[in-house]
Amino acid sequence: MAPYLYLSWGSPQNPVQVMQATGVTCFTIAFLLAGPSCQPLWDGTDSLTSSIEATAIANIRAAGGDAITSSGGSTSSLSLEVQCSSASALATAYKKVIDTYSLKAFDVDLEGSALSTNAVQDKVLQALALVKAARPNTKLILTIPSGQFGLHSDARRLVTQAAATHTTLDVWSIMPFDFGSSSTNMSSATVSASEALHASLKTLFPGKTDAQIYAMQGISTMNGITDNGEIITLAVAQAIYSYAAQHNLGRLTTWALNRDRACTTGLSVGTSCSGVTQQPLDFTKMFVRGHL
Image (cartoon, rainbow, N blue to C red; front, top):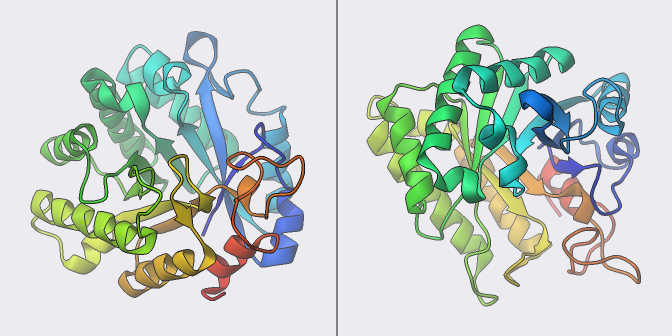
């Protein structure tokens, strides 16, 4: 469990205090974007070595934890994935981040126009292949949106291309929300989306067992009310956790720690609170400990 923490968005919590309150030991710090000449910068403006993100990572590690960094996100046009002119340039940017923080895992969140552009998809896969060859011990995670009953065409093309080019990725993590209806049963919809991904990966990687395929899968769920009004309550999150634990998925996380609290005056759903009934950090506590 490494919840996303976006330090330039909403009212982010202090990660060390969250560690002390919940027992969580790892965070996914978002988002790396492109600065001038394909330089990886936090939000496209802040230095890797002198920023609130760099300080947070240092403090997390000093407290006995660790961090994953995430590149991309919904601001597709400003992403490294779009702005870097070649796969080698993109790989150089990724390796700079990995080396700066001595990362054990690196996440690329590919969505929006970045995902819908075939040339960007191919560039990302080629870059990740270069990174895996140069930094084989770094776990590479590719996070992509998902429909309720399977990957959308763009994401399906990405996975198919990865298999065809023998690109080694450690985890394919889906974002199973924003299906389009506030009445959607989000626990069953999430399981349906994950099982559809499993079937796709099983077809594309026929030499792997079910257990090996599940280990290649991840779920990045949203805690609380989604952009489309779907409701992920603590009970729904518990069901998602149970499914992930049963199948030993390679990743389970939430978007985002910033939202892991009930809404009060001055806190808006989506940026600073979940919109559902909860105590502070309930989602994080539940995912860490495996129960409500």
